[in-house]
Image (cartoon, rainbow, N blue to C red):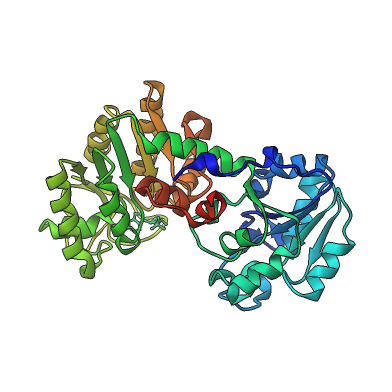
Length: 397
Ligand code: AMP
Protein backbone atom coordinates (compact mmCIF):
# COMPACT_ATOMS: atom_id res chain seq x y z
CA UNK A 1 0.00 0.00 0.00
CA UNK A 2 1.03 3.57 -0.57
CA UNK A 3 1.80 5.07 2.81
CA UNK A 4 2.50 8.45 1.25
CA UNK A 5 -1.22 8.84 0.55
CA UNK A 6 -1.90 8.98 4.30
CA UNK A 7 -2.00 12.50 5.74
CA UNK A 8 0.26 13.43 8.62
CA UNK A 9 -1.15 15.44 11.51
CA UNK A 10 1.39 18.23 11.01
CA UNK A 11 0.10 18.72 7.45
CA UNK A 12 -3.48 19.25 8.59
CA UNK A 13 -4.97 22.61 9.60
CA UNK A 14 -5.65 21.72 13.24
CA UNK A 15 -5.74 25.24 14.73
CA UNK A 16 -8.59 25.76 17.23
CA UNK A 17 -10.22 22.50 16.14
CA UNK A 18 -11.97 19.79 18.10
CA UNK A 19 -9.75 16.79 17.43
CA UNK A 20 -10.73 13.17 18.05
CA UNK A 21 -7.60 11.09 18.71
CA UNK A 22 -7.44 7.27 18.93
CA UNK A 23 -4.72 6.41 21.46
CA UNK A 24 -3.38 3.14 22.84
CA UNK A 25 -3.75 3.69 26.58
CA UNK A 26 -4.16 -0.02 27.37
CA UNK A 27 -1.89 0.47 30.38
CA UNK A 28 -1.32 -1.76 33.42
CA UNK A 29 -3.25 -0.67 36.54
CA UNK A 30 -2.37 -1.44 40.15
CA UNK A 31 -4.45 -0.49 43.20
CA UNK A 32 -6.62 1.78 41.05
CA UNK A 33 -3.65 3.69 39.61
CA UNK A 34 -1.63 3.57 36.41
CA UNK A 35 1.37 1.34 37.10
CA UNK A 36 3.33 2.22 33.97
CA UNK A 37 2.57 5.38 31.97
CA UNK A 38 4.87 4.67 29.01
CA UNK A 39 2.04 4.41 26.50
CA UNK A 40 0.67 7.77 27.63
CA UNK A 41 4.07 9.42 27.43
CA UNK A 42 4.56 7.88 23.96
CA UNK A 43 1.72 10.06 22.61
CA UNK A 44 3.22 13.26 24.06
CA UNK A 45 4.46 14.73 20.80
CA UNK A 46 1.06 14.54 19.12
CA UNK A 47 -1.00 15.68 22.12
CA UNK A 48 1.33 18.61 22.83
CA UNK A 49 1.26 19.61 19.17
CA UNK A 50 -2.55 19.71 19.31
CA UNK A 51 -2.65 21.58 22.64
CA UNK A 52 -0.15 24.14 21.35
CA UNK A 53 -2.52 24.68 18.42
CA UNK A 54 -5.31 25.45 20.87
CA UNK A 55 -7.24 22.30 20.04
CA UNK A 56 -9.84 20.63 22.20
CA UNK A 57 -8.39 17.12 22.35
CA UNK A 58 -10.85 14.25 22.68
CA UNK A 59 -9.12 10.95 23.38
CA UNK A 60 -10.64 7.54 22.76
CA UNK A 61 -9.05 4.29 23.90
CA UNK A 62 -9.68 0.77 25.11
CA UNK A 63 -8.52 -1.06 28.23
CA UNK A 64 -8.37 -4.83 28.55
CA UNK A 65 -10.99 -7.15 27.10
CA UNK A 66 -14.40 -6.28 28.59
CA UNK A 67 -16.05 -8.02 25.59
CA UNK A 68 -18.72 -5.43 24.85
CA UNK A 69 -19.96 -5.05 28.45
CA UNK A 70 -19.42 -2.44 31.14
CA UNK A 71 -16.80 -4.01 33.44
CA UNK A 72 -15.79 -1.53 36.18
CA UNK A 73 -12.26 -2.91 36.55
CA UNK A 74 -11.61 -1.93 32.92
CA UNK A 75 -12.74 1.67 33.37
CA UNK A 76 -10.37 4.30 31.99
CA UNK A 77 -11.14 6.65 34.92
CA UNK A 78 -7.76 6.02 36.64
CA UNK A 79 -6.05 6.71 33.31
CA UNK A 80 -7.64 10.19 33.14
CA UNK A 81 -5.82 11.17 36.34
CA UNK A 82 -2.50 10.04 34.87
CA UNK A 83 -3.14 11.85 31.57
CA UNK A 84 -3.72 15.05 33.54
CA UNK A 85 -0.42 14.51 35.37
CA UNK A 86 1.52 13.89 32.15
CA UNK A 87 0.11 16.79 30.11
CA UNK A 88 -0.56 19.33 32.88
CA UNK A 89 -3.90 20.56 31.50
CA UNK A 90 -7.43 19.82 32.75
CA UNK A 91 -8.62 16.35 31.69
CA UNK A 92 -12.38 15.72 31.72
CA UNK A 93 -13.48 12.12 31.94
CA UNK A 94 -16.70 11.09 30.13
CA UNK A 95 -18.33 8.05 31.73
CA UNK A 96 -19.39 6.75 28.34
CA UNK A 97 -17.75 7.12 24.94
CA UNK A 98 -21.00 7.84 23.06
CA UNK A 99 -24.44 9.24 23.88
CA UNK A 100 -25.66 12.31 25.81
CA UNK A 101 -23.17 11.89 28.68
CA UNK A 102 -20.17 11.93 26.32
CA UNK A 103 -21.65 14.74 24.18
CA UNK A 104 -22.15 16.90 27.29
CA UNK A 105 -18.57 16.47 28.57
CA UNK A 106 -17.04 17.12 25.15
CA UNK A 107 -19.13 20.27 24.63
CA UNK A 108 -18.30 21.62 28.09
CA UNK A 109 -14.53 21.22 27.62
CA UNK A 110 -12.54 24.23 26.42
CA UNK A 111 -9.88 24.50 23.77
CA UNK A 112 -6.49 23.68 25.26
CA UNK A 113 -8.10 20.97 27.39
CA UNK A 114 -8.45 17.22 27.09
CA UNK A 115 -11.43 14.87 27.27
CA UNK A 116 -10.89 11.15 27.82
CA UNK A 117 -13.83 8.98 26.78
CA UNK A 118 -14.66 5.78 28.69
CA UNK A 119 -13.48 2.41 27.34
CA UNK A 120 -14.61 1.94 23.72
CA UNK A 121 -14.85 -1.80 24.22
CA UNK A 122 -17.69 -1.42 26.75
CA UNK A 123 -19.79 -1.34 23.56
CA UNK A 124 -19.86 -4.49 21.37
CA UNK A 125 -20.20 -2.23 18.30
CA UNK A 126 -16.58 -1.10 18.65
CA UNK A 127 -15.03 -4.47 17.77
CA UNK A 128 -17.74 -5.07 15.13
CA UNK A 129 -16.59 -1.98 13.24
CA UNK A 130 -20.17 -0.73 13.43
CA UNK A 131 -20.80 2.29 11.20
CA UNK A 132 -23.56 3.81 13.36
CA UNK A 133 -21.35 3.60 16.45
CA UNK A 134 -18.48 5.20 14.53
CA UNK A 135 -20.84 8.00 13.52
CA UNK A 136 -21.68 8.62 17.20
CA UNK A 137 -17.97 8.77 18.03
CA UNK A 138 -17.32 11.08 15.09
CA UNK A 139 -19.62 13.69 16.67
CA UNK A 140 -16.82 14.37 19.16
CA UNK A 141 -14.43 15.82 16.60
CA UNK A 142 -14.02 17.87 13.46
CA UNK A 143 -10.97 15.85 12.47
CA UNK A 144 -9.59 12.44 13.43
CA UNK A 145 -6.02 11.48 14.33
CA UNK A 146 -4.86 7.86 14.52
CA UNK A 147 -2.15 7.55 17.18
CA UNK A 148 -2.72 3.95 18.35
CA UNK A 149 -0.30 1.84 16.35
CA UNK A 150 -1.05 -1.14 18.60
CA UNK A 151 -4.60 -1.34 17.19
CA UNK A 152 -4.19 -0.43 13.49
CA UNK A 153 -4.23 -4.13 12.55
CA UNK A 154 -7.82 -4.31 13.84
CA UNK A 155 -10.84 -3.24 11.80
CA UNK A 156 -12.73 -1.61 14.67
CA UNK A 157 -15.14 1.34 14.69
CA UNK A 158 -12.50 3.64 16.22
CA UNK A 159 -9.78 2.58 13.78
CA UNK A 160 -11.61 1.84 10.53
CA UNK A 161 -15.29 2.94 10.22
CA UNK A 162 -14.51 6.28 11.88
CA UNK A 163 -12.58 7.37 8.78
CA UNK A 164 -15.85 7.45 6.78
CA UNK A 165 -17.10 10.32 8.91
CA UNK A 166 -14.08 12.51 9.63
CA UNK A 167 -11.02 13.60 7.68
CA UNK A 168 -8.21 11.52 9.15
CA UNK A 169 -4.44 11.65 9.61
CA UNK A 170 -1.74 9.83 11.57
CA UNK A 171 0.04 11.18 14.63
CA UNK A 172 3.78 11.28 15.20
CA UNK A 173 3.99 7.89 16.92
CA UNK A 174 2.21 6.04 14.09
CA UNK A 175 4.31 7.96 11.55
CA UNK A 176 7.50 6.72 13.18
CA UNK A 177 6.28 3.11 13.13
CA UNK A 178 5.08 3.27 9.53
CA UNK A 179 8.23 4.96 8.30
CA UNK A 180 10.46 2.52 10.09
CA UNK A 181 8.63 -0.73 9.51
CA UNK A 182 7.68 0.28 5.97
CA UNK A 183 11.23 1.18 5.00
CA UNK A 184 12.93 -1.72 6.72
CA UNK A 185 10.50 -4.43 5.78
CA UNK A 186 9.07 -3.59 2.35
CA UNK A 187 12.44 -3.97 0.76
CA UNK A 188 14.65 -5.44 3.48
CA UNK A 189 18.41 -5.57 3.36
CA UNK A 190 19.30 -9.28 3.04
CA UNK A 191 19.79 -11.78 4.49
CA UNK A 192 16.58 -11.09 6.37
CA UNK A 193 15.89 -13.15 9.50
CA UNK A 194 12.79 -13.46 11.65
CA UNK A 195 13.07 -14.88 15.15
CA UNK A 196 9.71 -16.08 16.43
CA UNK A 197 9.04 -17.43 19.90
CA UNK A 198 6.31 -17.40 22.51
CA UNK A 199 3.96 -19.97 23.91
CA UNK A 200 1.22 -20.71 21.44
CA UNK A 201 1.93 -22.27 18.08
CA UNK A 202 -1.74 -21.87 17.08
CA UNK A 203 -1.41 -18.07 17.37
CA UNK A 204 1.60 -17.94 15.09
CA UNK A 205 1.46 -20.74 12.54
CA UNK A 206 -0.16 -18.50 9.90
CA UNK A 207 2.47 -15.86 10.60
CA UNK A 208 5.24 -18.44 10.05
CA UNK A 209 3.66 -19.53 6.80
CA UNK A 210 3.51 -15.96 5.51
CA UNK A 211 7.00 -15.17 6.73
CA UNK A 212 8.42 -17.93 4.55
CA UNK A 213 7.58 -15.76 1.53
CA UNK A 214 9.61 -12.88 2.97
CA UNK A 215 12.63 -14.10 4.93
CA UNK A 216 15.88 -15.92 4.24
CA UNK A 217 16.22 -17.25 7.77
CA UNK A 218 13.44 -18.32 10.14
CA UNK A 219 14.41 -19.06 13.73
CA UNK A 220 11.88 -20.73 16.01
CA UNK A 221 12.14 -20.86 19.80
CA UNK A 222 9.92 -20.68 22.87
CA UNK A 223 7.07 -22.99 23.76
CA UNK A 224 5.94 -23.23 20.14
CA UNK A 225 9.19 -24.91 19.07
CA UNK A 226 8.19 -28.20 20.73
CA UNK A 227 5.31 -28.80 18.34
CA UNK A 228 7.82 -28.49 15.48
CA UNK A 229 10.34 -30.74 17.22
CA UNK A 230 7.64 -33.33 17.83
CA UNK A 231 6.69 -33.09 14.16
CA UNK A 232 10.32 -33.94 13.38
CA UNK A 233 10.02 -37.03 15.54
CA UNK A 234 11.66 -35.82 18.76
CA UNK A 235 10.25 -36.72 22.18
CA UNK A 236 9.45 -33.51 24.05
CA UNK A 237 8.38 -34.84 27.49
CA UNK A 238 6.03 -32.50 29.33
CA UNK A 239 6.92 -29.51 27.17
CA UNK A 240 4.21 -27.31 25.65
CA UNK A 241 2.79 -29.22 22.71
CA UNK A 242 -0.16 -28.66 20.42
CA UNK A 243 -0.95 -32.08 18.92
CA UNK A 244 -3.54 -30.52 16.60
CA UNK A 245 -0.87 -28.43 14.87
CA UNK A 246 1.70 -31.13 14.13
CA UNK A 247 0.50 -31.56 10.54
CA UNK A 248 0.62 -27.81 9.90
CA UNK A 249 4.08 -27.66 11.47
CA UNK A 250 5.20 -30.33 8.99
CA UNK A 251 3.76 -28.27 6.13
CA UNK A 252 5.62 -25.16 7.32
CA UNK A 253 8.88 -27.11 7.39
CA UNK A 254 8.24 -28.51 3.92
CA UNK A 255 7.49 -25.03 2.57
CA UNK A 256 10.71 -23.70 4.11
CA UNK A 257 12.67 -26.37 2.29
CA UNK A 258 10.89 -25.67 -0.98
CA UNK A 259 11.54 -21.94 -0.67
CA UNK A 260 15.16 -22.37 0.38
CA UNK A 261 14.54 -20.65 3.72
CA UNK A 262 17.05 -21.63 6.38
CA UNK A 263 14.77 -22.71 9.23
CA UNK A 264 16.55 -23.13 12.55
CA UNK A 265 15.20 -24.86 15.63
CA UNK A 266 16.63 -25.49 19.09
CA UNK A 267 19.21 -28.27 19.38
CA UNK A 268 19.51 -28.22 23.17
CA UNK A 269 17.40 -27.03 26.06
CA UNK A 270 17.19 -25.84 29.63
CA UNK A 271 14.75 -28.33 31.09
CA UNK A 272 13.06 -28.79 34.44
CA UNK A 273 10.76 -31.19 36.31
CA UNK A 274 8.54 -28.39 37.57
CA UNK A 275 7.23 -25.17 36.11
CA UNK A 276 8.28 -22.78 38.87
CA UNK A 277 10.18 -19.60 39.55
CA UNK A 278 12.75 -21.44 41.67
CA UNK A 279 13.19 -24.49 39.40
CA UNK A 280 16.81 -25.21 38.52
CA UNK A 281 17.74 -25.44 34.85
CA UNK A 282 19.24 -28.69 33.57
CA UNK A 283 21.01 -28.36 30.22
CA UNK A 284 20.26 -31.27 27.89
CA UNK A 285 20.01 -32.27 24.21
CA UNK A 286 17.01 -34.49 24.98
CA UNK A 287 13.86 -34.10 27.07
CA UNK A 288 12.95 -37.02 29.37
CA UNK A 289 9.27 -37.94 29.76
CA UNK A 290 8.94 -36.33 33.19
CA UNK A 291 10.62 -33.01 32.27
CA UNK A 292 9.76 -29.98 30.14
CA UNK A 293 11.69 -27.59 27.96
CA UNK A 294 11.71 -24.16 29.61
CA UNK A 295 14.34 -22.35 27.52
CA UNK A 296 16.77 -22.93 24.68
CA UNK A 297 20.19 -24.24 25.68
CA UNK A 298 23.69 -22.76 25.22
CA UNK A 299 24.47 -24.65 21.98
CA UNK A 300 21.25 -23.26 20.49
CA UNK A 301 22.11 -19.76 21.69
CA UNK A 302 25.36 -19.98 19.76
CA UNK A 303 23.71 -21.53 16.69
CA UNK A 304 21.11 -18.73 16.55
CA UNK A 305 23.57 -15.91 17.35
CA UNK A 306 26.06 -17.06 14.69
CA UNK A 307 23.29 -17.03 12.08
CA UNK A 308 21.94 -13.63 13.16
CA UNK A 309 25.39 -12.10 12.88
CA UNK A 310 25.33 -12.92 9.17
CA UNK A 311 22.03 -11.09 8.65
CA UNK A 312 21.33 -7.52 7.58
CA UNK A 313 17.71 -7.26 8.79
CA UNK A 314 16.41 -9.00 11.92
CA UNK A 315 12.87 -9.00 13.24
CA UNK A 316 12.14 -10.58 16.62
CA UNK A 317 8.84 -11.37 18.30
CA UNK A 318 8.28 -13.75 21.22
CA UNK A 319 10.55 -15.05 23.99
CA UNK A 320 12.76 -18.12 23.59
CA UNK A 321 11.78 -19.47 27.00
CA UNK A 322 9.94 -18.74 30.21
CA UNK A 323 11.86 -15.48 30.64
CA UNK A 324 9.71 -14.47 33.62
CA UNK A 325 11.71 -17.04 35.67
CA UNK A 326 15.35 -15.98 36.11
CA UNK A 327 16.78 -19.45 35.38
CA UNK A 328 15.03 -19.56 32.00
CA UNK A 329 15.57 -16.03 30.68
CA UNK A 330 19.06 -16.54 29.25
CA UNK A 331 17.94 -17.78 25.82
CA UNK A 332 15.83 -14.67 25.23
CA UNK A 333 18.61 -12.38 26.47
CA UNK A 334 21.02 -14.06 24.06
CA UNK A 335 18.77 -13.21 21.08
CA UNK A 336 18.64 -9.58 22.23
CA UNK A 337 22.42 -9.49 22.61
CA UNK A 338 23.02 -11.09 19.20
CA UNK A 339 20.73 -8.48 17.65
CA UNK A 340 22.64 -5.68 19.38
CA UNK A 341 25.90 -7.11 18.07
CA UNK A 342 24.46 -7.38 14.54
CA UNK A 343 23.23 -3.77 14.79
CA UNK A 344 26.77 -2.64 15.64
CA UNK A 345 27.85 -4.31 12.39
CA UNK A 346 25.27 -2.40 10.35
CA UNK A 347 22.19 -4.62 10.54
CA UNK A 348 18.68 -3.24 11.02
CA UNK A 349 17.19 -4.75 14.18
CA UNK A 350 13.51 -4.57 14.97
CA UNK A 351 11.78 -5.71 18.14
CA UNK A 352 8.16 -6.50 17.37
CA UNK A 353 6.53 -5.35 20.59
CA UNK A 354 4.72 -7.49 23.15
CA UNK A 355 6.67 -9.87 25.36
CA UNK A 356 9.97 -9.25 23.58
CA UNK A 357 9.88 -5.72 25.01
CA UNK A 358 9.26 -7.24 28.45
CA UNK A 359 12.38 -9.37 27.94
CA UNK A 360 14.40 -6.20 27.41
CA UNK A 361 12.95 -4.67 30.58
CA UNK A 362 13.66 -7.82 32.59
CA UNK A 363 17.26 -7.95 31.36
CA UNK A 364 17.74 -4.16 31.76
CA UNK A 365 18.75 -4.15 28.09
CA UNK A 366 18.83 -0.68 26.53
CA UNK A 367 16.07 -0.27 23.91
CA UNK A 368 18.21 2.32 22.13
CA UNK A 369 20.68 -0.41 21.16
CA UNK A 370 18.14 -1.62 18.53
CA UNK A 371 17.18 0.14 15.31
CA UNK A 372 13.51 0.12 16.29
CA UNK A 373 11.35 -1.16 19.14
CA UNK A 374 7.75 -1.24 17.96
CA UNK A 375 4.84 -0.26 20.21
CA UNK A 376 2.55 -2.78 18.51
CA UNK A 377 3.13 -6.54 18.80
CA UNK A 378 0.31 -7.78 16.55
CA UNK A 379 0.48 -4.76 14.26
CA UNK A 380 4.22 -5.06 13.66
CA UNK A 381 3.90 -8.78 12.89
CA UNK A 382 1.21 -8.11 10.31
CA UNK A 383 3.48 -5.46 8.84
CA UNK A 384 6.28 -8.01 8.43
CA UNK A 385 3.87 -10.46 6.85
CA UNK A 386 3.07 -7.79 4.27
CA UNK A 387 -0.60 -7.62 5.27
CA UNK A 388 -2.60 -4.45 4.82
CA UNK A 389 -3.53 -2.92 8.16
CA UNK A 390 -7.22 -1.86 8.24
CA UNK A 391 -6.53 1.21 10.39
CA UNK A 392 -4.08 2.52 7.80
CA UNK A 393 -6.04 1.40 4.74
CA UNK A 394 -9.02 3.42 6.05
CA UNK A 395 -6.88 6.57 6.07
CA UNK A 396 -5.20 5.93 2.73
CA UNK A 397 -8.48 5.96 0.85
P1 AMP B 1 3.15 -15.37 23.53
O1 AMP B 1 2.11 -14.60 24.26
O2 AMP B 1 2.61 -16.48 22.68
O3 AMP B 1 4.15 -14.50 22.80
O4 AMP B 1 3.96 -16.15 24.64
C1 AMP B 1 4.70 -15.51 25.64
C2 AMP B 1 4.86 -16.47 26.77
O5 AMP B 1 5.49 -17.65 26.30
C3 AMP B 1 5.73 -16.00 27.91
O6 AMP B 1 4.91 -15.75 29.02
C4 AMP B 1 6.69 -17.15 28.16
O7 AMP B 1 6.80 -17.49 29.52
C5 AMP B 1 6.04 -18.28 27.42
N1 AMP B 1 7.00 -19.33 27.01
C6 AMP B 1 8.09 -19.19 26.25
N2 AMP B 1 8.74 -20.35 26.16
C7 AMP B 1 8.06 -21.26 26.86
C8 AMP B 1 8.25 -22.64 27.16
N3 AMP B 1 9.31 -23.31 26.69
N4 AMP B 1 7.33 -23.25 27.93
C9 AMP B 1 6.27 -22.58 28.40
N5 AMP B 1 6.04 -21.26 28.16
C10 AMP B 1 6.92 -20.62 27.40
